[in-house]
Amino acid sequence: MIFRNSLEDDLKVFDFNSKSEPEKKPGEKTYVLFKSEKDEVSKDDPIMVLSDPDKLMKHHEIGTFTNPVKYTAFRFDKDGDRYETEILRMDDRFEKLYEWLANSSTTLKLSGRHTDEGYAIYRMHAVSMTGELRTETDSFVQLVIQRLLSSDIEEEDTDLDDDDSVEEDENLILTDINSMQDFVVCAGRVLPSNIRKWAVRNMTVQKSTAISPDERRHAQRALSMMLNIQWKGSYFEAIDPVQARRILDEELFGMDKVKQRIIETIIQINRTHTLPAYGLLLAGPAGVGKSQLAYAVAKILKLPWTSLDMSTIHDIEALTGSPRVYANAKPGLIMEAFSRAGASNLVFIINELDKADSKTAAGNPADALLTLLDNIGYTDNYIECMIPTSGVYPIATANEKNRISDPIMSRFAVLDIPDYTPDEKKIIFQRFSLPKVLKRMSMTEDECIIGDDALSLIIEKCEGTTGCRDLEQSAEHFAANALYQIETTGKTSVRFDRDMARSILEL
Image (tube, rainbow, N blue to C red; front, side, top):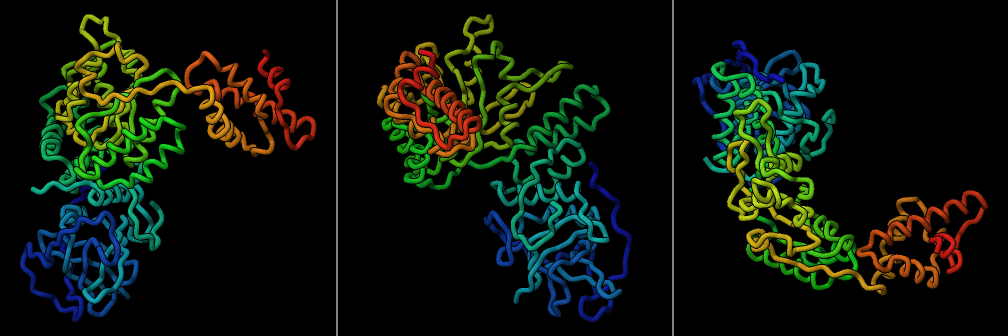
């Protein structure tokens, strides 16, 4: 995907009002920059403002920006004549994007509103001269705009309607070296300074003919992984603790002490606006909802999540990645997890931490997690760049915490989750397991009714097993039987008593 074009040819310049040729100095800027921290654009918070005293520009106007090396303006045609209107003000986040659009002579369809100050642009799309969307180029433009709006800036679709929102095209992945270079030019400010410098070095490597094809391939893959991650700062907005508790209660029954500890963590974030120094280790028997609790925390924090299953890892290099000197080199699973999430701020769920293989000659693979858990930055051997981890909240799950090494344990706040009592399992079956299954099977509560004596038998059947998985399996068994009877006998409702339950459970 190549966006670079030759510079535009000289064209006759018209004054916006009189059509007489104005006097302009090469490279003269007509606009002033202003700063904004808004995460969306509108008429009141535009990308830029153009001069339009006679209000000749339409709500949707097609044209191109002039080459900023010559002068700064927007050029468009109207009634067979060509006009240019000066840029008055510009959000400083978009200056590099503007320069790229102008230098590449990209035809744009602007969405704007007339204001007292001028024509306020709040949206732009890459189009052809006939107004048809240039999908590939426009996806790149929307990606850059979204990143500029939503990322923390370091100092140094076919729909062209009136929607003010700008959404990132989730289907666009930067893989082409030219598009990645254009992204760094247009939106390099959204990258942490060390990653921006790393990206420039790797683009130089990728374009070099003095190195092997394998090294160039590795550089391009590493660039694609890093540039497709949305990099954020470590500042976190306040979270409503009442809403957080509601989410926890909806997802899980009981666990009052565990939920209280999570709410305390939320209060701490609200005071400091940073994540706690320690992650969470959820320790308890299988099936009690440890993973579900981790997902609930991600929902509360409004962060994407990624997961890593330690029970399948037997080699430290699988986590840390392999150096690029090897033809078959590849990034580690930790870096792959960042790439899948597409964000630097995330909940990192480490499942089965106690199952990590500690009998390997190279040591326990879990030891590779130490730098990630310390929140001082993580370096993958393949990427060769320090990744900031101050926005990473690690949550680990384990069945037997005594199998976890002391250095790893010391980096977590440990929450012990006990198994449920029989009375708690009854409530879980009635309030969570059965309603969940009925919803999944498009059934109503009246179609499958479990009597108290039948429920007691179900709980007896699940005695001796930990967690709630058997409860949901039993609920699905009974719901399927009720659905079978409804569909084959014409019944509208099935109520299970103890004898029916005994027959189904084959006791």
